[in-house]
Amino acid sequence: MNKEEFLYRFNLLQHGDSCHNYQHNSPLKSAAVLIALVNNSDTDDINTSGLQVLLTKRASHLKHHPSQISFPGGKVEPTDKNLIHTALREAQEEIGLSPDTVSIVGQLPHYEVISGYQVTPIVAVIDTPQSYQKDANEVDEIFQVPLQHFLQPQNHRTIVSYRNGQHHNVHFFLYKHYNIWGATAAMIKDLVEHIK
Image (cartoon, rainbow, N blue to C red):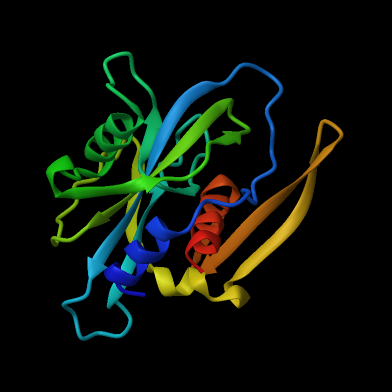
């Protein structure tokens, strides 16, 4: 899928219900993540052409979600102007992504996660080639997955999990040696469902 088709579909359609049905039982802290789609339309390589989803592998020593695949992002700080500012600030801190290179498209619904956060995904497009600089205290790896991979239903899996007597769906996408699951996979699934 190219940038123009993605933007047309994302902006034309209203968001439906989220596939993410986990609800936390205690007060939540606010956080935001950046779902950045890298526009590689200038390349002739079929494996890297079109939109690529920018992901990170979290550092293994982190308290919350160690070694999991995630989007750049984190908790809202008192100095943040809004959730977009939070997502952009965190992406700059974690992977060296300059906010000037990011075009905000919109956002997805909030997600409640097991670590006690209400996470808002901010959707954006990056049109210019980037050289990332990871913060080793937070990120082990930075990589991209073709959006097309997530658009193929056979690449999506769901299991039902139970916590505190409640069931909720846990979503998975496998890509090469990466296991993308949980809230990150739910956000991807919701984005895919929105633009299909």
